[in-house]
Image (cartoon, rainbow, N blue to C red):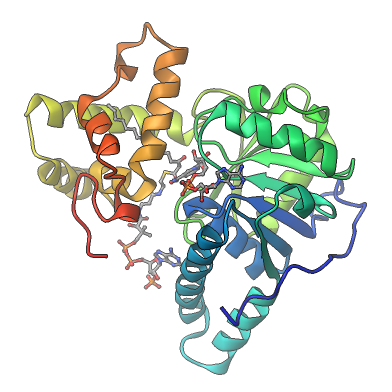
Length: 309
Ligand SMILES: CCCCCCCCCCCCCC(=O)CC(=O)SCCNC(=O)CCNC(=O)[C@H](O)C(C)(C)COP(=O)(O)OP(=O)(O)OC[C@H]1O[C@@H](n2cnc3c(N)ncnc32)[C@H](O)[C@@H]1OP(=O)(O)O
Ligand SMILES: NC(=O)C1=CN([C@@H]2O[C@H](COP(=O)(O)OP(=O)(O)OC[C@H]3O[C@@H](n4cnc5c(N)ncnc54)[C@H](O)[C@@H]3O)[C@@H](O)[C@H]2O)C=CC1
């Protein structure tokens, strides 16, 4: 815990609209994605506030960041002094809070990475819109929801977009940058500039369900679950097949467990509601049962597979 500083005021910057000029970043949500985004932003020299709803969740995220940043440092610098310097400098850029509204007062960019639920995200952005300076750019890391529908909660649609990162954020190189009709060119350029400053390769996508990666990845996961539910093959064999036969680093069940089955269910349920005639999005009894039992994947110690805690 000593690595982390407490919440202090940050340098106020009016220049966020310029490409690459985002300095102060507030990340809302410190779960799998929020912690990863906050970590990489801190590693790349941004002043970061990471927010969650209570201290226990923030502490859990801090622990995850410490483990991850040590892996990053080892990869970059080996075991030498540079590694400890990199870790302490990075973590000195990161503060935490349990109050989203007061954490956006000097933000150039707010990245939201809370639960995949449209109403909850809209409620949050409505509150933040009143509290953030006018220049602040808002972005959602949503996997499946419409950015335009989320942005509807605010009066800053020209300064709103999607910044969709991939899990684990410190490792995955891609960032999907999503613009809605109202997103200004300055906002889009600033989001891309920031993505590059974060060390990511950016791709542009319109506000279409699943953007690029999830539009392809989620139907693949659906099909994997259907094969299992029909009893055509076991989860283990499907995973082995996709790793050895298609060269994927993880099989679909390993990946679903890694992403979190609660997040998977939010996506499935949302798309089923939005596209009721597309049978591919019909609910999965197996997925529903696992979520009901609290078996959410790696993060709870059990999902399709069991994990050592
Ligand atoms: C019918 C209904 C069912 C429908 C279900 C629908 C479900 C819908 C789900 C939708 C999901 C949407 C999610 C989303 O929006 C977008 C995503 O993020 S998709 C996920 C994308 N991610 C992947 O695909 C990950 C694939 N896996 C990998 O790349 C690797 O397995 C991984 C890097 C995770 C781990 O690698 P592995 O070799 O297995 O393990 P190592 O531990 O050796 O790690 C390798 C390397 O990477 C470093 N590392 C790993 N994790 C971290 C970390 N957290 N922080 C820092 N560094 C990390 C590690 O140190 C190693 O480095 P070396 O230098 O190579 O040793
Ligand atoms: N899990 C994944 O692999 C990926 C998820 N995403 C998206 O990122 C978002 C977050 O997903 P995860 O990090 O996996 O979820 P998670 O469940 O691990 O974390 C979400 C966190 O947000 C917090 N939270 C909820 N409401 C909040 C509020 N009002 N203020 C502050 N914090 C709040 C929760 O307490 C929780 O700690 C979702 O929109 C998801 O679709 C995007 C890419 C990959």
